[in-house]
Length: 255
Image (cartoon, rainbow, N blue to C red; front, side, top):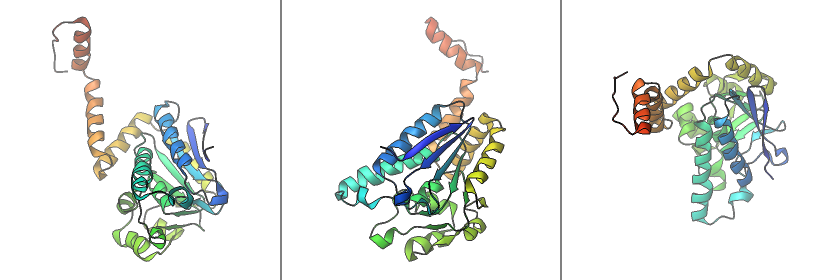
């Protein structure tokens, strides 16, 4: 049974990691649920904003469950855990809707990488960020050295990944990694979401695509998606499709 749940209230969806006894550590069923939920969210015209949070007060997500990947053979670890997890995290990062991570507690390792997939983040004052993988003999595998390194200064990422240091909430705010420090991160995230709900969903989606393309997030696909959207609104596209259906030669107007 998955411990990652999707709920919807009006135009706002919430994804909740729900395994507080294990600090919401990620398992294979949780990754599979995230993949499936992202597909649902992408297809929904009613959902405008997505909030990602965790259950409990100690941790948003303490990373990957060692029990899930520890027994894996090296090739399976690389292919089934790291590569597949990376694909699923990429799917969240490339979601066409704005996403907010409500960090109700610590975000370590895979938890920090998961938070980095969201567009903005709010954090509770007592929470910390960390990349502790070297302490158990591995390296960040779900874009800790890539996406996180685009959102934080290189020296700060090295501080966490090479020296095992944690970054507190106020420092994360000063560095721009989080948008707000709040005692009630759920309420703070919902307030941000409600403001976004009143914006044009198409304008927000296209703006997100443009920003992502600018920073190199799925650039090739986004360029083609944006170009395809432009051409799909043209008279030439309508003429081409109509001519094909009618089995005649198209007459393009250039409009």
